[in-house]
Image 1 (cartoon, helix red, strand yellow):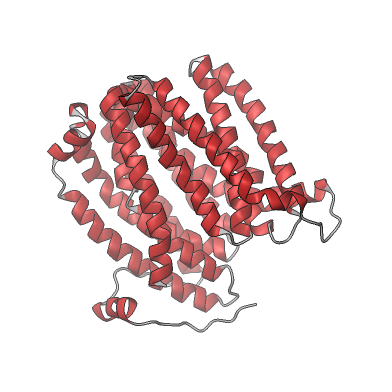
Image 2 (spheres, helix red, strand yellow; image 1 turned 180 degrees about the horizontal axis):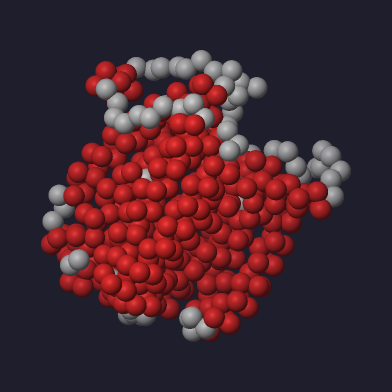
Length: 423
């Protein structure tokens, strides 16, 4: 168990380091306003991707071994192109960005969606190593191209970041196409129509993606509200604080990959619950230790790394940390629901968090600025986790907190095996 979790964590940690360095470069060379604009662009790309993933998301992983990959790819690509077309019409109509940035958001989301489709197919065919290579390339290449433009071409504008994304997304797409080229010519084991493939993708994708849509909107709607009331500089400061605080979830996310793979391949509810409760204790304990370390980092460190405009980061992060820790409950329990096929439980928890965010953010941000958004985030994290915990308890689960000392020793120094009834 520990080896699998550490392997997942190492990949995520490396990508997070590159993303942090990207944030440092943008903050240092473009200032808080430039960092704010970069965050708004990324948030917009993420929102468009939510709708791409209704068909071309995690459902491909599930269906990759069940349906013809060629048809899966064609249907998913066509869905991506359709969503991109209508997204561009909407974004241009809103006139929130310049025409260049609007076009860039749509094109980047399209490239990212194509790559994600190919990566999902690789995971579904158990080619996780190749998928990791594809996903690792994006932050690495973005950092590389950004560094070259800033230091060697003295191109200090948001367009440098946009071009860096274009190059990294495009090369990652080419790499993913190389990895999946054999699947384009794979013989079909059953004669299914394209309509059947589309129905299967939308059926599984919609249920799974609903919770992600509510979650991401809840997390990122604050960027646009802050920009409206306080400007792009405030968004830049807030986004860096959120990125650092949320990086703590890398630990739990790595644990969740192990948990999801075990539960989704088991029909034993008791085993799934025992594993979930065991991993919840581990995630909460390790996250608490990391939070304590983050809490003692001095203000001077953040201003040294990001620049003098980011002197508020320390106080923002300290405010966020309790909510970030509590949200670990939802991450673990939410993967239990997903592994058991209870997608609507996740959707309910995240929907309530989204509603709570909307109710609070438009009243708190005008009064308290960035601190108001932080307070809204904390309450949203807490409420989403509380709803997930209540649903879990109603299904027969137990509430847990930290592991006992004997359990910690067991995790670290012994190999335990829980009996399960699998299909």
